[in-house]
Amino acid sequence: MMYDKRVSFAVTDSQDRQVLGMNEHLEQTLVLIKPDALKQSLTGYILSTLSEFHTGLRFAGIKVVHVSRLLAEEHYREHKGKSFFEGLVEFITGCYHYPNDPQNRRVLAFVYSGLDAIQKMRGIAGPTNPHQARDERPGTIRSLGTVVQLHDENGKVVGDRFDNLIHASDSAQSAEREIKLWFKPNDIPPHIRLFPTEQCDQLYYYKEDHLFTRRIEGSICLLAPGDIAWKSDVETLNTIEQGYPTERCLASVAAKYLINELEEE
Ligand code: RTP
Ligand code: MG
Image 1 (cartoon, rainbow, N blue to C red):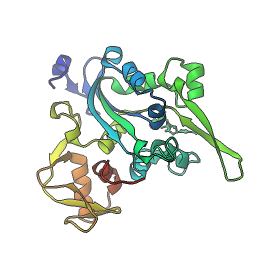
Image 2 (image 1 turned 90 degrees about the horizontal axis):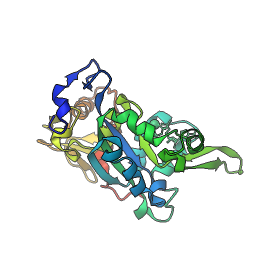
Image 3 (image 1 turned 180 degrees about the vertical axis):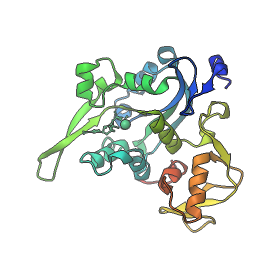
């Protein structure tokens, strides 16, 4: 690794993380600046708070994303079926904050890299519920968020939506899944990539949750021979193409290749 001198002493532990000292790990984490933060012009404040000066963490990848329903559902798949799920999708796709302005519906997605990046970002973000953040961890980013009551069609309160400004991966496993969901390898400079990549040797097209190895009308090309992809994505696509069941679904691979491709509202 070229970007941190201390990494030259790194060894690999049983979970394949780079171990630097007794308790220090070189990690990457996914951070999202959510639509409520953009609407309130808090982007600059949040980025300053997360800056290398304050956190010791560095950018590895950055993008502006119009979040599709597909990406939102994949990102929050662990919450599918919960009472707040639909509200959460409406929130993260920007539909709630920009009901009449689809052109403003976006989030800013970042990969941050550095020692203990995951827990550092979780700490600065603060508790999920902004009211709790205000009470227990004033000064965290989410202490500036809002709680909005959700109602059913009869006006009865059915739960809360936490407009909490920022997402940060909650574990090494989530960080890997989420970074690979939002970012292609080529969105991250080669010497800063943490997860294995592979050169693809097949053509892969996607349309309506189906995979094709040749172009069909209305399909989008995911990968072509020679493209660099996450190794786990190539394995998933090969398995799907051969007709075997896979642990990961097609949408979890395709979502990042569809980012900013479709003019979905
Ligand atoms: P995030 O994934 O957005 O960083 O948030 P988190 O880890 O702190 O919390 P998580 O449990 O993963 O929840 C994801 C998002 O779902 C919404 N939520 N609402 N009303 C509720 O009880 C509830 N619980 C979670 C929040 O917007 C949270 O950020
Ligand atoms: Mg979470």
